[in-house]
Each structure stands twice: as structure tokens, then as C-alpha cells.
Length: 214
Image (tube, rainbow, N blue to C red):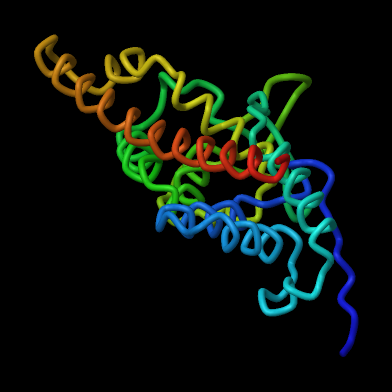
């Protein structure tokens, strides 16, 4: 049988949002830990699942620990990054978002399977820049998926969104205090759903990590 080389990523920037979305989709089904460890190798190391069993047990455990350490990190927000030769920048002033941008971002950001669409709203190609200032392309609603974006950038943006003061954004989109209160309550619920998903992922990763060290 042909030997398969196991290439292990060393940092989050070597992983993509698309890989993480595949991982969270499987994680949502609450698989057993052994299967989850094999899926981690398959997804993040690009190894066919049926080949994982042929690697040494000690090697698999070591790789899983490396991956767990990376996935448990909380990277900081990066306002600009390069993907496929194109520079992307986060919306410079979030309080100045259009209604379409806000609605789409609020909708997609609550579902990990659509997080690539959410971040396509948040980050768009830079069309001009001067020092730390820049302008991004206008939002069309037909932006390219961000599934290939580096995972450190993606997670940094997700944690940034979860910690964002939603009221500042809401003030630009509603006309009465009552409506602000209602939409803020819904935003709190939506934000909690997103956080629940992330915390479920972190708790499961922590459990795997504890078992690999026994």
C-alpha cells in the first residue's frame, strides 16, 4: 500500500474557514471522540479517512493535540489580509453599514454553515488605500465566498462580532427607542446562539484534549 505523508499545520493561518465549517458541521452531530479525532486528521491534514487507521496511534494523538491547541486559541481581529492575491479589508466604519449589509451579516453570522457568506459581507476587496486608511468595494450581495480565508482571520472576526456593541449599529437602522429595545433583544438572542455554538465546540475540544493526555 502506498504510504501517505501526514502534513501537520503549525498555525491557524495554515487552515481555512471552509475546513473549520466542515469540522463544526460534523461536531454538531455530537460524534464519539474517536471518530472526531479521525475527522480532524482528515479535514485539517487532508488525509483520506480510510487511511487514518494506518498511522501510528501515538502519531495520531500527537497531531490531535497540536490541532486542539490551535483550535482553542482566540486570535485577535485583523482588519486586512490577502487571499488568492487579493487584499481584503473589514468594513472601515461598521456604524455606517447599509441596511442590506447589516441584514445579511446578522442573518449569516448566526449559522456556521453560512459564516463564509457573513465574512464576505464584513470583508471586501480593498480598492484604494493610504497608510492605515482604505476603501473597500461596495456591497452587492453577490460577493465571493470567503471559505478559503485563513482561519485565524475568520475566528478573529467571529469573536470580534460576538463582542461588538450591537446597539451602536442598531441606532443607525431604527427610528424609535422601542424598536431599538426589541431589535437589541433579538440581537442578544442571536449572539447567544452563535456563542453557544462556539462554546459547544470548545467544550468538545477540551474533552478530547483531556482524554488524549490520559
